[in-house]
Image 1 (cartoon, rainbow, N blue to C red):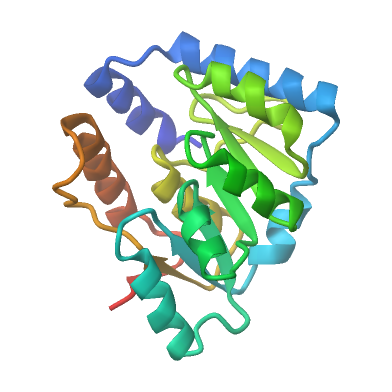
Image 2 (image 1 turned 30 degrees about the vertical axis):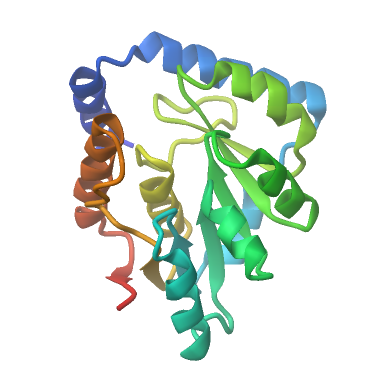
Length: 219
């Protein structure tokens, strides 16, 4: 993760986040998973992703239409579906269950829990702002893989990435996806507030620098 830490430190400075808070959250996540005994083996991610086309679903308004186009083009056949947090709700509304959900638990948790019960692995991300959400929801999940944006430890992983969407992309790259296709991504969503737009610009910057697999946005 040598490439990631300088990027992370830049993000901390840019947003005024505290590294100590991120690391406290990661330690809490590790404890909660140990207490609930709901950790999924990391090998499951490799089994799902390696050498397969991976469709990464963002939360933009275009997701439903992107999914319909992907279905018409038979792109769903044999592909892995990774949902970024709230994208899970759109997938379920179309009667699709993601193989993997990447979430910091601020999406529609009723839908995320429902998908989890239908088989979705949940890659739960800890950061300084979601400690109450970790306490509330981690014990209610199964097949959880914990991540941090700081230094990994004790099977709490860091695959790179800052927002749910770009973390999905780096996860796919880390486990050997043959190709990553972006659905439901809009880096210039004018409906978002200033903080969210700033995060989207960081997501765009990180995804543009991604080198882990062939990458394209659905057109």
